[in-house]
Amino acid sequence: MKPAAVSERDRKMAQRCVECPVCRRARAEQKGFAFWFVKSIEDGLCPFCRAYERVYGRKAHEPGS
Image 1 (cartoon, one colour):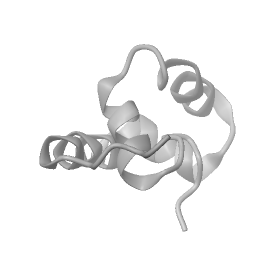
Image 2 (spheres, helix red, strand yellow):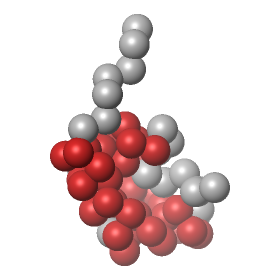
Image 3 (spheres, helix red, strand yellow):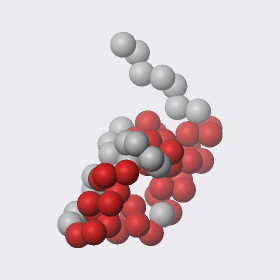
Image 4 (cartoon, helix red, strand yellow):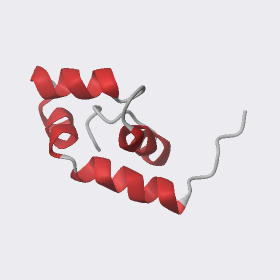
């Protein structure tokens, strides 16, 4: 299965996830309420978290490189 191309809209939505204080804290701390919250909602509720995964190839709660 070939992965879909990342659109400009996906990039803009992923940027909102990068700037989100809750997601930022979850990526930095890797524990606590923010981590649990982002891990729980990223697949089902948050379109920005889903876009982040499409653009960066990792979940919104996983630490950056």
